[in-house]
Length: 366
Image 1 (spheres, rainbow, N blue to C red):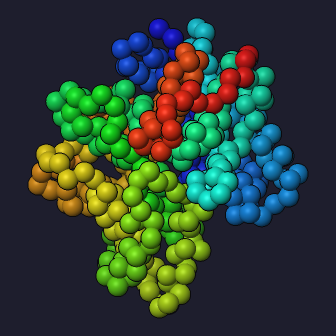
Image 2 (image 1 turned 180 degrees about the vertical axis):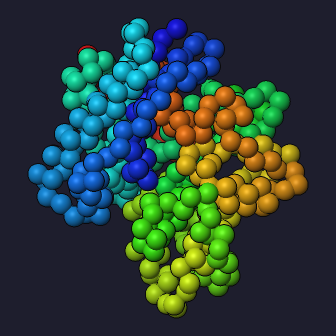
């Protein structure tokens, strides 16, 4: 069986997830080993600065090289800790997104992490820059995981939705027996706003299990203002990121009526994430919702999703389907690398809005 490595760093920027994945021709993906490589604090801050349009061309170049070195280290450490001795066909590297602007006269997306460096340091063929070919074909370049979700998690007799809750939340609609993912898009904020608010007020990078949020209460008027965000009423295809949903966005809403208790704001942000996810789900019932990403570890959020979907919708994690929710996205980019290496499309035009199926990314030989 061929082995691939997937490297993923998402909008939360909390580290590089590296997954060694065994892929067979039947669409099965077996997670063999995993590793997380943390970002050094200075590099993390440099990436944050660039994502906020603060930096010069030299900063961009230096970060691109440094992130490439770090992604290569993640792959090497993954192999060292796994004890895997056999060949690895390719690495699929998502890179670190610093800007995603899918609309306008010149749509673009920008990820850091020079794949030339990854291929050189690891000696393994590297596939990278997955999103821009889809954008060149008129798509939004996101989300790209629905094709993987369909191949690995689709079922002949159960209507399923895969919900990835990272900094931003996205979903893939997988109707029973469907030939392909029928829909997929970013629903809005996932953990990102909650993490940022938690860090500002507690110094912690995230709210463990949503415990702090549970000490607060939902503020209905504030929630209503949040829900007025035009993005939520857009029809798919659509994608978003921290360019929109960030602390500046939150402060604008809070500035109209300052003085809210921080824990109440946190609880209201959790409610926003839960409502914008469940409100975007298909109306078909019964429905099985499988969650992956960091949000699967937020007990309060998972409980709220279950409450909102009861009685005919059930909430699980992808662990129930055989892949730990923390590693689904890294595994997806291993799968996308195989698609590219075999000359197969990796996008779903109905999801991204592209004019047709496309082989994604560039190949950087070992």
